[in-house]
Image 1 (cartoon, rainbow, N blue to C red):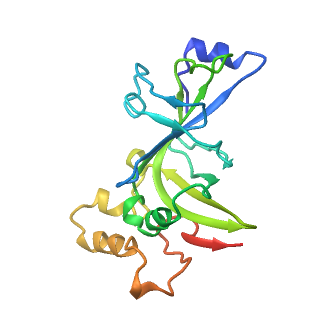
Image 2 (tube, rainbow, N blue to C red):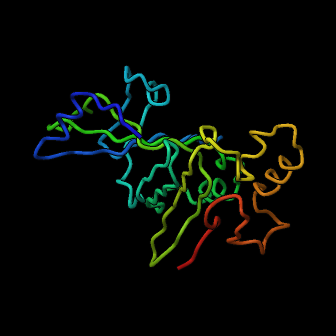
Length: 214
């Protein structure tokens, strides 16, 4: 997909030292996340991107891992963000991860920006590198450290073919109450009746959800 890069960004990319920052917005229902890997806070305006302008992005530790971003006819494939979770509220984190109604199918956006040489501001304007929906979220523990991974998949609202995920079926076929019921059942948070139901694969998204112990 072609990117509309401003002249300032093109010039910044040609500098001897490039200072990239990743900007992310995850529309989790009860607790939206708007963060970036730059210093302090970032409050963009005037970019012309309605998903970006007017938001306030707070600085977090640099993302530990970002998988390759691939695109197909302007839609693209899944991308996974993995970041440290040891500094987060563990109880709240578990609640959000286990209650898939809060995040599965919710919008997610990623932008790439460039800092000025003195790192005091962002070169106008950041450009969007991913638009999709969250399809998977899980925590991983390894050698005393914990991480949270979020999988952002393509947004089939822009697809050229029929929906093929149960996750999207109710959106395109709102009168199909059976598929709505099945998605709601799959998104049900783990509770007393599902105490042994850990790390399942339900076919609604790529990979597993829940918690992994390595």
